[in-house]
Structures are given as structure tokens and as C-alpha cells.
Image (cartoon, rainbow, N blue to C red; front, side, top):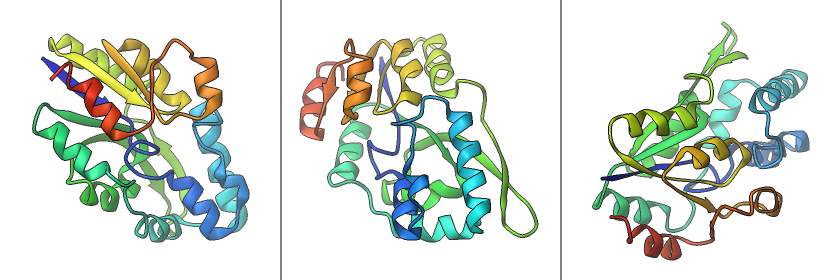
Length: 199
């Protein structure tokens, strides 16, 4: 039996940090896992920038509350859920994700947790586990599932390599160039045709 593991941002919803950058005018926050392979370096940089500009968790949540899913994302998720199980495996945080997941029909989400101080300032984050996307796929395979994985960024690569079937969905050209061995899909209808071969 096949099960689908998918990234969230760039696949079903726009990139949260790009939206934050656009709303706040802080261009340094436009950098995402599409640009930086080292997630810890990226998050430490974001926290430093937020501190410099006095941004707190509620500022980010206000931006996220206005984000809508990508066109066709909800219908695609419903299509998948009629056929198999979907797990969204993301490097976002539970404190960010709820309004987005509500709009997507609340598929199962595995993600991380933020740590705040008493003033609502983000002071740290806790990864669910090291290399969480790959290890999710690995755990499902240990339960005798075959796993299809899809994502768009550097932080999805280890998950894609571990999966039985892998798909890059609307990745930037730098990711395509660095990983030419992965098939690339650019829209949900094309994705349905490929996935329809498995479930």
C-alpha cells in the first residue's frame, strides 16, 4: 500500500517567511529552504533578524492568518484522501500551522515547536527529531508502507531520497539543477496522473 508524504510550503500553501518579509518590508526574511540547505542556520538567522526588528510570534501569526492555500491545493488534498493516506511533513511550527491546516481540511501534520519567552518573543525552537522528514518516511516503511514523497526545497531532499517514489513539485531552478535525477511536476493535474499509477 502506498502512502503520500508531502511538504507544506511551496506545495500546498505559499512560503510563510516570504509573506512575512513582504508584509514587514524586511527583505532578509525572504530567504527560505529553497535557498539555504542548512535549516538550523536558516532558523537562527531568522530569529536574529526578528530580534533586530522587534518581531514577535503574534506578528508572524497575523501574517499567517491572511495566507490562503495555493489554487487547487484543497481539491488535490481531497482527491488524495479519497485514495490513500496523506501526511504533511513540514519544517514549519505548530504555532504557525493551524490556520493553514484548517483551510486544507486538516490533513495529518508532523512539524516542529517554537519556544517563546513571557513577552511572546521567539527564543528557540525544538525539532521533532533530527532529519525528521527522512525519518518519517523510514518509519512508515518500517510499518510496511511504500512511500511516495514530494517537496520543493533542499530540506525535502533526504525525504525524497528515502522514499520509494519521489517527486519535486514546482521547485526552483537551483534545486532542479542540483538534483537532476528527481522528476519534476509543475501542477496538480499532472501530479494526479502520476499518483494515479500508484493508488
